[in-house]
Length: 204
Image (cartoon, rainbow, N blue to C red):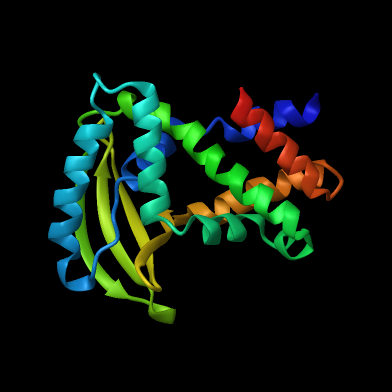
């Protein structure tokens, strides 16, 4: 099935993205005045627990899911990733899509935590940007020694949550939106094609 083959190609992200998402999912939101110390302290503790070789895959996935849902605005990211197709979707399609999106992220990356040990994480400055969001600069040292600049966009609502990550200036939210749009276009513009593809990826 061509759609399934394309899905496998699209979702087989390079190792650099897997490593960055590993760090991304342990990054808790923090206030501007305490961002550096809070992120560094909590981040390193969480990396230690999620990359523990003795933790079971079930426990790692459970912890991954808890962190993702606690510190990221999952619904907002899922909605943005769907682009214009969100407005065209029925309520039932939207709810199924958000559920599948969350499962897709957890399924895709939870198992990879054990593969990335010794990754360095250096937090830089935090600044206010348009709309009241905060942008926190950081550098991540990959296992092969490369250093990658990463910026974390945090939005304040009732709590602070991460809404986007920019890797070397490239928005991961926009990248995901473009990938999903490609899948939908392959399905003749039908959102059902994306839902089917996500189910297949989750059930692999």
